[in-house]
Image (tube, rainbow, N blue to C red; front, top):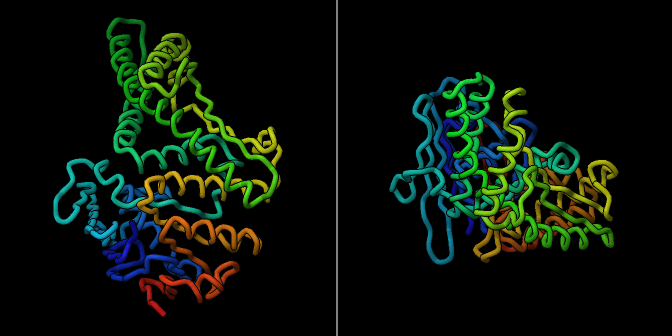
Amino acid sequence: MWLSELRLSNFRSYGDLQVGFESGLNFLYGENGTGKTSVLEAISYLAVARSLRSANDSEVVRWKEDGFGVGGEVVDGDGGETIVLRFTRGRGKEVTIDGSRLERLSELVGHLRVAWFCPEDTWITKGGPDARRRLVDMTLCQVDASYMAALTGYRRALRQRNEALLNWTPDEESDRVIEAWTEKLVQWGGRIIAGRARLVPALADKVAGYHARIAGEDTLTLAYRSSVPVEDAAVEASARDGFRAALVHSEEDEKRRGFTLVGPHRDDLEVRLEGRPLRSFGSQGQHRTAAIALKLGEAAILDADGRGVVVLLDDVLSELDESRSEALVSHVGTHGQAFVTSTTGAASGLARPTSESTGAARFRVDVGKVVRE
């Protein structure tokens, strides 16, 4: 699958934009602040109905406007479809595919899949568990619509349960409210735990292979660390039972502290290099290489069925030496379409693919404009 055309309306600095792309490498260059990253962000809306830059929908609306629109033509095999997402303040988002409105945003999953690389990805291994959970969750959201629904339901139930714990008083009604939200949390949380437990071994295998090709002999390993003791985490029923037991065990402490202490929101993806925790012992170069391997692994998982994935490289090559740039571009090209942004008209690792590969194109980005050269 690949994106042949993108249309934007009142999206960040773009008032009205229509631009066609190639099925291979698309190189976007321009000064900082001209809107290169916004193009990639718009593509992410067509894949998961949200910004992969973690921006709120209202932040994406062009100044003084009431909403934005993103449309795209997606080619998949011999066919294609038109995806349109609209956001209006006070009304939220709606998505249509070939003119038919989706009842749930999760129904968009699988129509266009994207993997996003950016310089901040080193925080996947450097920072806290939030970034690593996000990598796993966004991968799962793009391959399983039920996982996206579970994640949305879990977050809602967690907010409500935390509020009930914070306002708890020693009476029957307070306990009843906590119990009700506990069951919702277990329902959604069991699916999340099982989904992560099934994904991580497959992801670990892909990541180890990419890391070995890029970095040489150093061994990179991944392991899912759940805050919930579960006998068989990959089985949803077992995950629910383990999660429920953990919540019962911690409930009295939670009532005293006013929030939920265990669950998928406290889990982590452990990353080790040669058996040692990368977060504690890794150099800057090791973190960067590990982040590249993780994102390539994500792309490979998304492309497991061979339909392709759109890879978004946001100013990444400027952070890499020439050999890593070439390795990244080479591996990305095996999964289908790619978008690469840069502040210069040429970038390390791109000279040969840009000039010699078929299906490659260059675009100059100015404020509110994307012009093919």
